[in-house]
Image: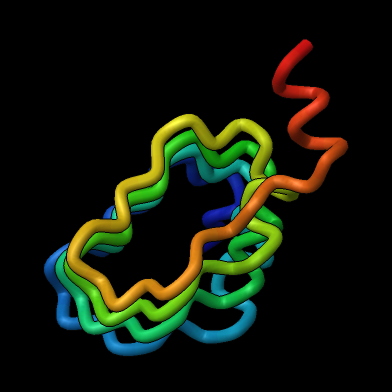
Length: 103
């Protein structure tokens, strides 16, 4: 079973505690990811391979941070839902990303 062309992934409300480090590595075409309502404490950095990501739903987990370079790698991201977590910081776009967005 090959999921390399998968565009939407919904694992919400599944009591997921952890995703493998390479979970998103071969899912570069993902546009919408729903992980809300689980017990995730972190997201794997392989999420950064999802350069076509448009929406990310990670609310109702136990996340303390999001991947710091999320906005730099996932430039198509237009919707981020991360309510009801334990977030202490949010990722920032680099200066080059901000300039691209403003143009």
